[in-house]
Length: 161
Image (cartoon, rainbow, N blue to C red):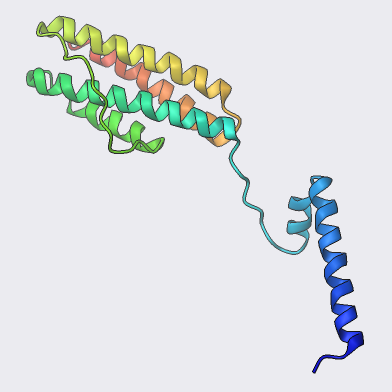
């Protein structure tokens, strides 16, 4: 059986620890407190970054669907490397399995290439703007890298004409 002194002492210690944690939380010192006891805190993503990732994922999924549709319609263009790059970009931002409806690519090969190059250029500019908007440095680096890759794809696809 626990003694009255032990019960009161345990209760007082619990109240003191809870008060210290509450004070640390209010003073934005929980990470410092965790580090002082040997725990490496895991940063929570900013809500705006979560929304940004969802938007980028939808955009990249649509671009991937467009590239795949163009590759199917114009199999002589050899768009396999672009499908692979677009798939890697989509996976980098966690694109799910839903495939958006895209307008069919033009029947004219030159027009299809021009449309695809334009889509890559537009996506590149959007990812550059998204990188500037990101709160997380890691997310900003991923988006900036995607922007550069998409710009390169726009140039290379444009050369297929």
